[in-house]
Length: 214
Ligand code: DX5
Ligand code: ZN
Image (cartoon, rainbow, N blue to C red; front, side, top):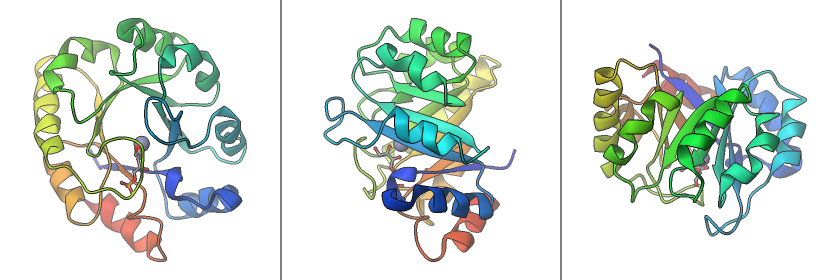
């Protein structure tokens, strides 16, 4: 299966989001990655539901929402109105099984996300409730950070377990993806690459083509 690319809108020009969304459509993106930060679960604040619903009005591209908020179950119903994949953090203080089930009930694909401090084994029993698992390869909160190679072993372990359980779960990686780290992530089992700062350059078209070729 060809690798899918989910550019992080966090690196876009917030004063002209529509133009950046159209730019991504033009270079053939598979998804758009939307980072929601609350200043509590992570030390940064980004954007919330009004921005995501505004984006949704202008695109049919799959919306991949990454909630980095405290006790995300409180907001699942709101975000489910716009998200295709709705992801939240295992560490964020929500009842995890219940929240994953709720996301599916609301008609979205569920995505469980783990920070660098979480071992993959901790979520093995939850894989049947996931449509996607997001492995963070940086501490969540900011774009433009350096890739943590420990994430590769986590992808491998999760891939092996997904196959062992006979499941259909996508593996996504987020943080520090660039020309050097992307092939390593794909080799380790990533199905979806999130890329922010690497893609938002004048070379977006070439870089997207390169990532898609992996
Ligand atoms: C970080 C976010 C990422 C971020 C990735 O907490 O979850 O999606 O935008 O940015 P890069 O690709 O620049 O590391
Ligand atoms: Zn993200």
